[in-house]
Image (cartoon, rainbow over all chains, first blue to last red; front, side, top):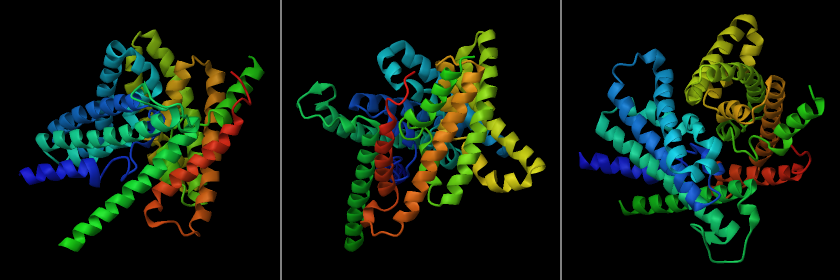
Length: 203
Length: 194
């Protein structure tokens, strides 16, 4: 049983990493990673919605007729997104303002609907919760790495702390997002290929 | 109606604030269906069509929501309406114009999860556009998406001919290419000012 949970963890964080491996949820990954803080904010908001929607969908999965399952999932997800939107407006107004359009757009993040369809609708509540949590953390981690790289290179600061005068502004602007994510995705594939080759040689 | 303003909105949605390359909306289809030029063209046409129809309908819906004083229901209502609308367009097209359906058919279901459509609807509301402005904004955004997607698809068709390091094949090289394209589009910055 525990090995199954470990598997879920490994899948979410590395092997099936939403951003680097599956290229899901690319829009917020590119748009909201101008700094590490924004990236974490977006990641945490998405994780919350993902965990809640996975739990609810796995509970009601037997009640939903097969034909209307997708609209039903969308309503569940959209309700949680609306709640997160209002919570963030109330408690973290500055972050809410910077993320702006991309908070309501969590609804159409393919990652969330994808997990609902491929995992939560087929599994019981505990694995669905863990899947949501680790997929969300994998997403947050990827966003955090991308956000840090862009902030350090583009603004010479990390988590808002200024440490360098070297500023490559291009990395804060849209082209830099594509370039940084492209290079990171390449490196991620490179490292994981190396790693899996090694484990293959061993066994 | 002020024609210059409409033209400015149109140009800015198409080139300056290009949905894909500077607003980061609709990246999934941008990376997903850009391997071949003809699939890219089909997707672009479908997106322009759905964007225009969806914008007009969500504009009226938003007025209704404001009238009923429940603006917080916006996200749920918009996404459901867009999903239904896409289904409806698919069914109607199948009946009236089988040729068009053949061309757009497989791309239509994919559009529901295209964040550019919902993003456009929400942007229209945030900018408080009137009906005409909404229509021009939608057509501009759709054309901008089409331009970016078609240019990108032609580049990717060429790229298949070159040797790329193994780990950079596919997603990574596509993203770097998109980065360069986005840099080129930054040249439009300052073309018009809203």
